[in-house]
Image (cartoon, rainbow over all chains, first blue to last red; front, side, top):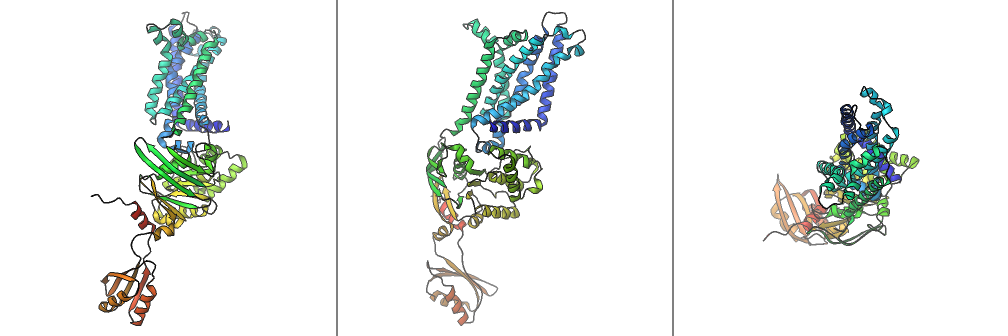
Amino acid sequence: MSNICTICRRELAACYLSPVAYVTTAIFLLVANATFVVGVLRNLGGDEPLPTLLFNAIALSLPILVTVITMRLFAEEKRSGTIEILLTAPVRDVEVVLGKYAAALIFAALALAPAVAAIFALDWLCPGVTLADVDPGAVLAGSLLLAAQCAMFTALGTLISLTSPNQIVSGIACFLAIWLALMLGWLLSLAPGVPPRLAEAVAATTHLEDFARGVIDARPLLLYASGTALLLFVAVRLLETRRWAG
Amino acid sequence: MIDVENLTRHFGRTVALDGVSFHVARGEVVGFLGPNGAGKTTTLRILAGYLPATAGQVRVAGLDVWRDSLAVRRRIGYLPETVPLYDEMRVHEFLSYRGRLRGLRGARLRRRLDETIAACELEDCRRQIIGRLSRGYRQRVGLADSLLHEPELLILDEPTIGLDPHQVRHARDLIRRLGQNHTILLSSHILSEVELICSRVLIIKQGRIVAADLTENLVGILKGNPQVIVEVQGPLEEILPVLQKIPGVSRLSGRTVDSWHRIACECEKGSDVRPDIFRAAAERRWTVRELRAERRHLEDVFVELTAEPPEV
């Protein structure tokens, strides 16, 4: 456990010592909140609940955030060769993966929290909207699902970062994979022969809309939790493949 | 301390190591030599637990490098050839992080940080950002990293590569000091270094160990006879027959520069003809300004053992 914390602390320090962290957070907040505000203004007088607009706006920018955070996790260590000193230190592969994953997740949470909190500044941002329109329970439920989705996408990014020593390649692959995960339900619903219930079960955007209305369902949470665990498990195994006889 | 038996490593179809076996006893300082691409770095990476072997057994301190990987890694200090470091960190932050990964905490971590920083003469750049350090300082930071946890075995891959002569001397002295209470396996291209630091040498060529012996024994196995060089002033037509008659001298060759005859006397193995040459010169009142046995160097052994056969 202490090795996970040590690696996590170093990763966070490396993140926040470079301007990339601040630029990424700023761009993410700008894009997510601008999309949200535009959505609110277009919906003035409409029936779309404010939390739904908020979480849709955030989900749209989430792939960029997660990609930028995770693409360097292992790719950078491979490029600079520091992976050699990391993996010859007395740390388990699972500790390396979890340490880096935890750092990426904390970074993502620190960027997502103000993006969600922006809903409580709506009356200042959008004249004509009052905070009485915002249901705190729905915001909390939406945040819960957003956290679960972010956890799974970050695990996906961590896994992809392990596959390439090139940050750009792993970044592009990660971005596409997250979009695919977000759109999976919609793509399946278009495919012939796929049962609608299956498409519905993996529809990330529908899950978010449900939670943003305050409908908490354990099944999507279980889906993202098990997806996260599976992806991290594969990541650890992938790191272990270097130990396989050549 | 290190037991390697029939170590084999393939990279695809390329055979990087082909049945390598050697043993390093506790407390030894062993040089690991070989031409580029001979398999030095691969062997050291396998020992450090970074690469797996295709076949064979590698044990460090009696523990299998793969089965007891964590226990082995705790006992090893490893300096890779490229000295990879986190460029954005400061020296003390980096060493502190690496110490924590090795389980050092609190007062012990602080003590070891101070000790290794002093031993590697890094006090001046303790708070500097690693990315701005010179090659020599980076090498020292890497060495400090490998020493932090007081490992029993140090594996150093080209520890003096890229250093200027002062830094090389410093690194050599440091490694020599470390050799007093550590087992060290180091690879190097600078053979004079290895000759000075290491008591024993392993030479690898095309993935096979071609020599493993004490440094002086290796020099002794050289083909060709020993030579004695004499620089003498006197009548050459008299000198050459006298030298030729000395028992043990088999062949003479030489040249004359400014009335000094520089003569190389090829001798039979085991004979030392220097006293006889001196006496012959003294009796005939020739002036001798140099008389020495030509020392064979590790470099000669290395070149002889690793030379490619001429293409036919």
